[in-house]
Amino acid sequence: MKILSIETSCDETAVAILEGEGNRVKVISSVIASQIDIHKLTGGVVPEVAAREHVIKINATIQEAIQNANLTIQDIDIFAVTRGPGLLSSLIVGYSAAYTLAKVLNKPLVPVHHIAGHIYANWLNLEEDIQFPVMVLTVSGGHNELVLLKDNLNFELIGETLDDAAGEAYDKVARLLGLGYPGGPEISRVAKDGDKNFIEFPRALNKSNNFNFSFSGLKTAVLREIEKFYQENGQLTDQFIKDCAASFQEAINDSLSQKLILAAKKYQVKEIHLAGGVSANQNLREMVTEKIKKYKLEVKFRFNENLSYCTDNAAMIGCAGYYIFKKDSEKYSSNTVNFPLPQLNLYEEKY
Image: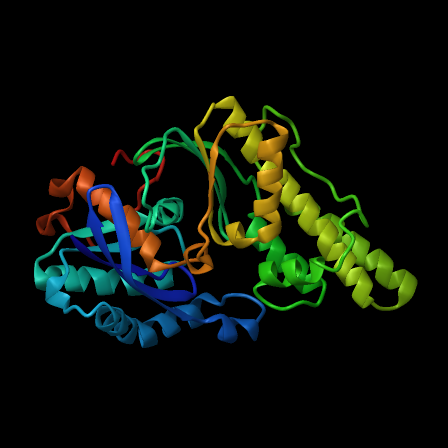
């Protein structure tokens, strides 16, 4: 089965072609038209600008993905597309393109929840079956959740952020320190030469029976340390920036990894997965690995080695779309394609 998938939930115009057979999904081609250079000018994503860029790039990105796969549009069996959450103006561009192609070609269209896409990014190009249950930490600029995957497409929300997501905190702290956008890679880069124990930043909701996250207080604590240092020294030094970044990264990744491990232990899972843009953070991966050993958990730890599958991409949407369609193909027949975007809750929708 050939799947063409589209992802335009934020600032990446992404299209992928995948082949699904049985419990395996292989990526044939994946194209991502990034807008990072544009949004660096404003230090963050401006929705109207992102939407316009999607309109400009969507057709060419679809054509490039098809050409790279050495296929024609008629070879596609189903279409998958991000239905949300995300920036509405951006989502509409990708959904409109997928909807139009599905209608014209009389092929099924599978709307995919963005978080489900990130969860299934770890299923791409696998040579072995996933062992359930699985505890997944999905973490990026817009979302931060602990999800118990009891079985294929059987999600249970265990914990979530009560305010800001970790990726958003990375972006904001990077801006406070005068670093570039996106903040995650910049913080990680300078933190390598910093002292992680320079400042003891708070870990909010740090209780074993609470799996929710909160990072707004951490951002405020960083701001106060920056203001204090500036008042005492007149400017931020390179070493302070490195030490502050390292201390911040230590605090946020410690909170993420600790809750992930405790949740995995409580629910006696067989696998632990990291997903989302922040899952590309090497320090976070190392911290989870260390805590798995510390708590003597006998689990498989998975994350995607290909960093392009950690951030927003269409391959993950196509992978989730394949399993959704495979479970109930009649529900997603070409006669039931809906427009505008169906608004469904990942944890209430029964796939």
